[in-house]
Length: 335
Image (cartoon, rainbow, N blue to C red):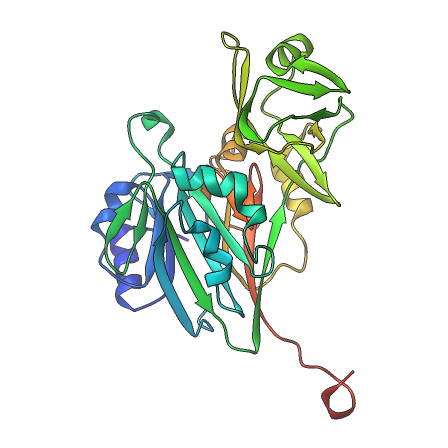
């Protein structure tokens, strides 16, 4: 939940394993302890959407964690993140927006050795929107007190054999019936694209069709809807920029509009979500759906510059569950 500086400091001093989100000013003043943190002043708190430079969003990780390692990764060693993760456990990953490690992870994570075999979840750290271009997003290693703007903060957590971790996503957006769009190259920006099989300048196409760029492009990965959000359309250079990379050869369609975000969100949250140890949502959902003061189910957390559930996502809520392993039943324990 959202806490004051003093309340957060007391939680740290109790020795709890925490992940924190707040402004750089408050995170830098916290005592050392077993925590990682990232910068953002936007939250879905216990009382609804809230913007604050003074409060800190505190998520206490499950007490069942047997061992945790906190470390930084840079662009050179981030490809080993899945290999370094414990065989039974989870990894929390915080990456500063626009850093080199952010760009590398976004473009290449699906191809990292061992990716998708162990739960990896997290978010892209950001800043107050009024500080864009003036202040760099940061991450913190609470054990050392060190901050970084060019490295990722990672917490590898090992679980006992009677616990298992899993990741989940809540994505309100589905592919609409608009033209299919694909790209010749992977990247965070594009000049041309194949639109309904015809090579077009994407910025021109967006202007011609009057496309609402608040709605993301959506790819269907064997039933999983993965969003790529528009960042800007530069009419001068005729270049379209995205918050996550579009991948070459993947077919995208613009999302179907969502009439009532809060109502649709409530209906999309699985009824059996339990034992949640971490969650976060997207700053674009916060802004476009005007979530300040509104509550969206019981999944709370920072509103971020990007979400991680193995790979980088946009306009998506992600969450981590740590559940007891159900015993086998039947003769001699076998079903």
